[in-house]
Image (cartoon, rainbow, N blue to C red; front, side, top):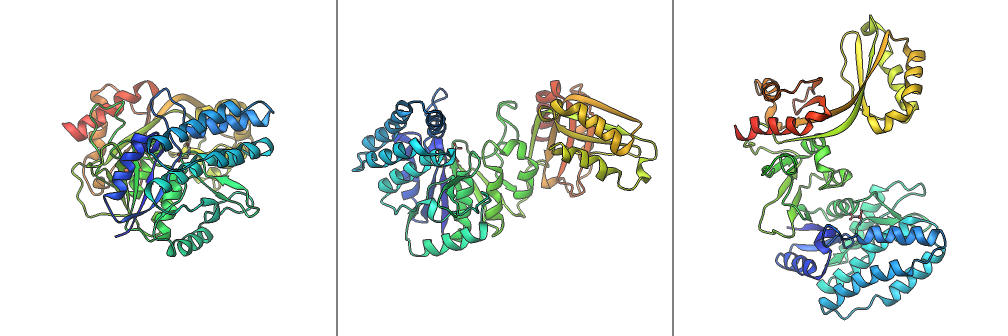
Length: 437
Ligand code: ASP
C-alpha cells in the first residue's frame, strides 16, 4: 500500500497538533508522502497564517510597515519549533521573505510562504525529505495549472525520494514566479501527489470526521456519510466545499484513487470514503442533503417558445455576455427559468432584462428573489419508487411550498427550489423523513 496524506491548517495549527500528526504518520509505514497546509486557527478568535501573509503583502504593497505582522507570523513558527524541541531556525528564511516583500509585486508569493515554511518544519520533525512545490507543481504563463507536465515531473522526482514533505497550495510559473491555487488549494496538491505516486488512497486529514448527511449546524446529530461517490459529492458541492476543495477530486479521479476524509483529532474514526463507484449498498436511500440560499429566478415566458429554434441559446447568451453563470434552468412548454446568484445578478438586472427583450422578444419576464436550492442526493435513489413523493410529503407536512423541482435523468439527485425563509426547516424535514422516520 502507498498513501498520499494531506493535513489541513487546523491539524498543524500548533505544536500539540503537530504531535498528533506525527503519531498518525508514524503509526503507518505507508504514509511516506505528506502535504501540509499553513498553520490554521488555534481557536475561533485566531487568524490563519495565510491570512496574516495576505495582510503583510497588503501592507508591503502600499509601502506601510509590515514587520510587526511578519513578526507575529514568525512567532507562530518559532513557538512550534521550540515546543517540539527541534534543532531548526527559520531566521534566514524570514530574512529572505522580508527582503522579497519589500519589492514583491504579487500576493501569491507572500501567501505561499505559509505552506513553504510549514513544510520545512514538518519535514524536520518527521525526519522526511523536503521538496519545494515550486520545483514540481507547474503552471503556464497565464497561471493555468499544467496537470500532465506536473504529474510527469512529480512522479519522476519522487521515484528517487523515499519520503517527502511537499508544501500544499502553490507551484511555479515558467519564469519561476510563485503561483497559488485558490484558497484551500492544499487539497488539490494532495490530490496531485496521490495521482503522481499511484497511491492506493488519498487521506485528507482535517478537523471533522468526514461529511455529514446534512449540515450539522442545521440538523442536530446528522449522521456521517461512510461512502460517497465522486458524482454524488459533486451534486452535494454546496455542502462539500467547506471540507474539501471542489477541484481536489479531479487529479485522483483520473486514476480512480479514493479520497478518505479523516479527523486528526479523532484518528480512530473511519471518516468518509469518496470513491468512483461502489457496490456498497447505502443504509439509507439518500446519501445527503445540501443547499444554498440567495438565488434569483428569471422566468421568461413566450407563447410557442418550444418550437422556436435557438431560443435557449439566445437567452443563455445574454447571461454569458453579462458574466453570469446559471445554477439551474428548468423549463416548461412556454416558459424557461434561469436560476442565478442574487448577489451577482442584482446589479445587472435592468440590463439583462433589456437584453433578453432584444434577444428573444418574450411576452413577459418575471423575477423572483430570495430563493434557496436544495439538492437531495443519493445513488440509492436509482430505480427507487416514491422518492420524490416522500420529498413532497416531507415538505408538505412542514408547510413548505415548492417553487421548482428538477430531477436529473441520472436519478442521482432531486433539486428543489423554495423560499429562503424555509431553508433550514426544509432540510430538517427531508432529513427526518429519510434518515430517522
Ligand atoms: N493555506 C491556504 C488557505 O488558507 C491553503 C490551504 O490551507 O489549503 O487557503
